[in-house]
Amino acid sequence: MKNKNSITLVLLGDIAAGKGTQAKILAKTYKLKYIGVGDFSRKMARKNSSFTRINKGVLAPSDAVQSYLKSQISKLKTNQGVLVDGGKMPAEARLIRDLLRKQKRRVLVIYLNLSHKESFRRTAGRLKHQGRADDTPQALRNRIKYYRLVYSKTVRFWQKQGVLRRVSGLGTVESATQRLKGIINKYCGDN
Image (cartoon, rainbow, N blue to C red; front, side, top):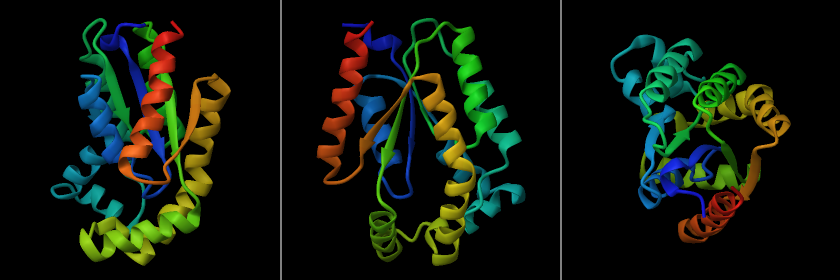
């Protein structure tokens, strides 16, 4: 099996697919450095007016996200495992690929998918419990629009690279984690 310390993952996912939750579980399980684009964007939205648009369901400014990604990925040590949670814009995906390629890393990109119906159901549940600023009905409509117009291009980009695997986000957190671990363990054994 491949050295777990050299695992290089990029995790993408549909709205409310549990990507953030799964990213943190996987980073802890495999002892990976966690680079969270969504966490960075929400933190910046609390103190930087150009980021407050994410509360309306609009993607964070890509130039700032790219700067964050570049600074975080460039700090990786040789053979240090990493999980990049996000990178929704095609330019962000190209940057991630280029930076990781320079480090001679073999990348696995996992897309956690859900139907739109399930995304709506889960988001409605979050509205009642968590009240995330980007889960209002208008923000959700904006996010779906961006997913269709922009995020789909990012997914196609990774597909063309031959490194994208799709995993269902349905079911419990534990069942989704098991499916993800199966893909990762196969990736570790393939090298």
